[in-house]
Image (cartoon, rainbow, N blue to C red; front, side, top):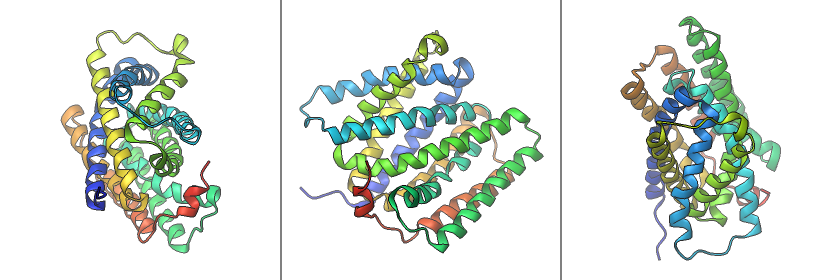
Length: 296
């Protein structure tokens, strides 16, 4: 059977990002209503059923030890990343949060150098300075708009989440090579829910009146993971990385339609610098099989 083209894989990645942005909008509303921990715990709990039915209902290859290690590693990082991101998202406009999170692909290049011994070239260093300038522009715009200390803490949480996502980028490609999209979606929901279950008796509230939003967010999260898992199985990360930047467009649309958020010139300028710096850094990068093989 002929493998899908890189263009089709890229389109699937863009679709995954669009669906995920829709989920972000639902989750922001949930976080404002019941808090980040509760929203994430219940969404992932429902996500177990949503992803488990199609995964468990059909024949599947046996689960390997290597795949399980990757599922656990990525899910634990995702649990931390998700709480930081959605806690921050409730305090800043969607487009601003997504713009700040776009620094993650650039962070992943430095993490790959640290963890896998890959070389960081002069262009990557210069590009990181451009992207960092974009972060400063967005924070300056936030200060200029006098959004308050809570918004600043939200921006810092989003940046911390981006660092976690940078680790995820490194794991994502290897994970997609040893497990299918259905398996990835199911075990991510299962393990992340398990992580949140540890603190649920003290931190999770009963989401009365929010089950439709939780169910919708769970479905969209699983669908997005399916799109992205399929895309990364058929194209290298270097080809698909630019698809991440379409999230800024989707976040701007959903932020305006759902929350009435408008883009400031500071956010647009900062996003241009961050996205431009990241694209400059990854242009010409290719997948490195040796580095991928070195992943745990």
